[in-house]
Image (tube, rainbow, N blue to C red; front, top):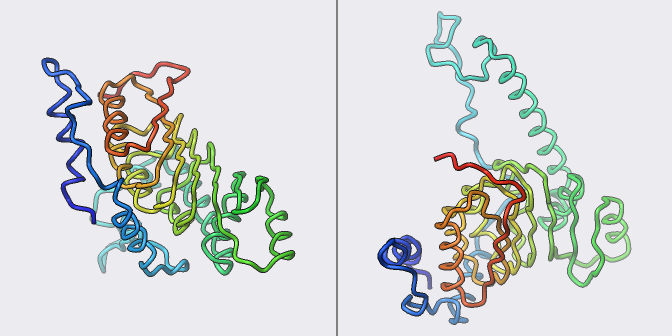
Amino acid sequence: MLYHRYSRMLFKQISDYKTVYNPLNVNEIIRYKFYDNYEAITYFIKYLRKREFNTRLEPKSYYKVKRKAPRGTLIRNEAPNTYDFFTFRFHEWWKRKKDNFYEYVENDKYQKYVKYGPNLAAALFVVQMNGKVRFKNHDEWINKKNEIFELLEKNNTNYVLEELDLNGYPIRYEHFHFIFNLYYLKSLSLRGCESINDWYLDKLSAEYPMLEKLDISECKNVTERGIEALYRMPNLKILIVTNFYGSAAFDLTCFMLEDVNPYLTCQIQQPKYKYLSNT
């Protein structure tokens, strides 16, 4: 069973072992037994599968609540946003309008596929967004929507997704649940997705209990804070990341993650171009 102390594990190790006067000594780090405990992993997976999920239910967006002006006035008595029309920032306003339109299109497409279940709905959504999918017991990758419907016509068995490829697609956090509830997914590639950041990884780490390979390389918004959350993936074996800013804390976090999960191998890639840190 998971304990709360695991969430503070990496922070303690970084502060205790990686200092200027106390270099990292892997032999001294305590190895935790969660990944060697089959009962703990089984309980964790069963807990995720017991959660009731309704694919038609969308998460609430509290920051999108439309507030009307008080009665008797024509102007709202609150500070305007940067993308409001009357702030005369037409570039921000037009960008916001396009984002809202793309969000509506994505949600409309996904709602048409909900009736097929989470696996086929996610597959059709990914293929529609120029991605690729691979089903269980199938060697070939599918990148066309017509090929998925051909498989449905041939067999009536339940299809299970094993691999997803969304390289380069800027998936939105509000629509991240489109590719959730895939409890048998083994490989997920989000390489080059500019929208992926630490918040995405924190959400993603608790949704794929059977995931064995995760590719988040070339995602320049991913830092060591998001990498820390991936200790919650008990079956993760291959993690591909890119250290854009040459941070020592980033490399150290990957080493700590490998030490926590002895079956994991982190492949740290170097960026093609050097980036300057924001801090």
